[in-house]
Length: 49
Image 1 (tube, rainbow, N blue to C red):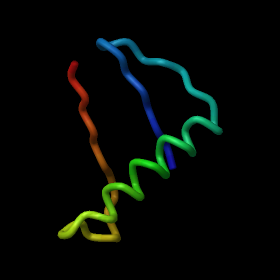
Image 2 (image 1 turned 90 degrees about the horizontal axis):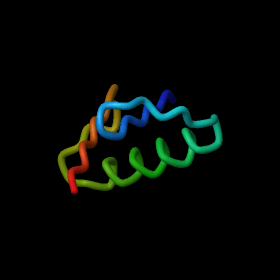
Image 3 (image 1 turned 180 degrees about the vertical axis):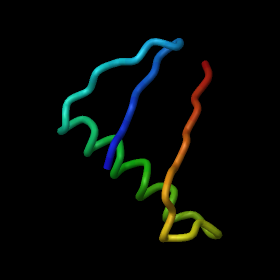
């Protein structure tokens, strides 16, 4: 699983451990929703403050 973090257009380097935590949390959250195909290929999450 490859996870990228961009804040205000700037790429933030994250190590493998953080990639696993962010990736698995996002994947599990999305997969628990009705209508999400469990064979998904890519998930995009955009957060604005």
